[in-house]
Length: 386
Image: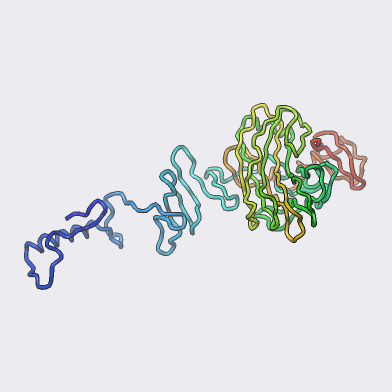
């Protein structure tokens, strides 16, 4: 008797026999060929013969794949869904294939994002942000209780402030817990005994000359952020805006350009504020308006209570990358070396030992006529006004 559609084999009539049954040709000649046919139709464990029909089984899971190995049961292939097949290695997704005209992707364990397999090798310079991983700190490496409203007070090209220019905020170069390939982060947190609950802000404004090439393009912003062990705010939100003016003054608090403002991302929550044990990576893809000549983004969080314990009640931003395309790719700096990154920063600001350097003699040439501040060292400031 053949197997049923579910694979069940049933002995022919007359079975099972009982003690004392005489073996007859009628019984044996029907039963034995039936068993032989069923055995022939079974798969040999030693590899003799091959399957003559499709092999079907359970879909499996990332930690228990459908097709795995005796010695490595957590490694193999499984069906995540009807339209998504994946390879898992030791219980972690590493590659996937999906229905439709989609590119095969691999899992980037550092960025924690799926990456198109044909974009893993990223061209250096894809990052449109200068000082994206906080290598350059010409002004200062530790600032707190700044109420000047200048915002450009620490890491080059980055802006920091507290609503109302309130006290109780610290910005410091941070050299601990950083992900591989990153030297520093920017720690933005509260000072001890601070009871102020005004918003804390960290952001970046692109110069018009850098925004023009992105007009009409889909771009992806990726941020690597770690929340402090004493983080008290309910969330960290991201806002992105564009404008149609030229290097206009914009408040980090409102993030509204005076001319042609478009809110591209409105205070989106990206990070798990309860997870302070690792750097979290989040990406947002958006389309830059075809007439945009200005672009800025901002992170916001509102601390609660009084900060009077060890640890940080704030965030550490380790890197930011803005690139064209809809997929996040591994982080790179805009400059091809530390010296190149410094030169890019020096178009906006330069530290000098004297305040008498002729503008034409500044190297590299600055993007605008600088204002000179400080008193030995002096800072030549050509940043976008705030």
